[in-house]
Length: 190
Image (cartoon, rainbow, N blue to C red; front, side, top):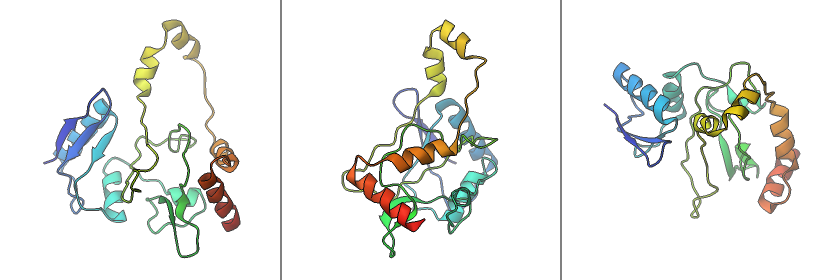
């Protein structure tokens, strides 16, 4: 059985006791879905580093997977796991999709006809500084915090999410030297 411990604030819960080498029971899956619905972000830590197959199996317990690598034209060892790394491979380029610099606020795969309901992130190699921060935002709370007249003005509006907008942003990152180097390496690879 997994344990769920709420983190400070209204967002996030730590999952204790997940075992990557076995499937979730029906009760564990229900626990995680309930915690995800109420806390929006789950943190799983303290277990051995899961394999790509184990990560994909966990993801599939929540729903259909998505071949992220193929959407970016980058082959990945496992189709349902998109490796984002700023570590350099033997060829001198980032392993997987380069992640050397910070990214703006975004929702993963929001440009798809059916956006992702969940995204799993795994951090397993961090620099001594801890690296760039990853933040999460409770958009339900943000919506509720808006003035009623603002919510009314926005209710019938539609947003267009585009992968090209993200690509344009990433291509324009040149102020930070590590970002500039990553963009240059990515352009050389393509």
